[in-house]
Figure (cartoon, rainbow, N blue to C red):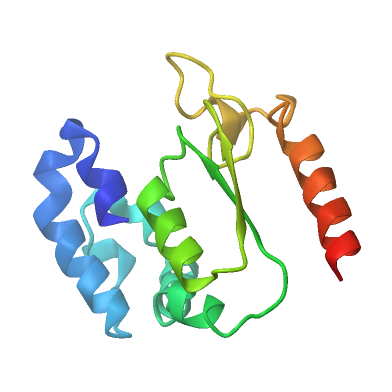
Length: 147
């Protein structure tokens, strides 16, 4: 979350407060949303804070390391939430994994809309990335053969 906010220079004035808020959530402490800077309040409602406290309590790489079955790691190079480095870490923990990189792919597994980085979040009519379904089908077919 911090990395996502740091990527946008317009968030500079909110970074100190956000860093403290995220540290509190990671420690299992919530905050009264009214006490948060108004621009951050939509991201830190009571329900979202409970969700983030739970979410931050898990380490995806550590959890993944215990899995021995087939794994497909899908990574879009325009994903604003999960960076290629994060996919690399999963791949290292899951030696049996295959990786599918989606050129111009976003976190919503759709092709990026140039000049509108949030379009794939807001427009459900946009199609999935053209390589996604064939890639998943190929992976499933290959996993079934190797089983």
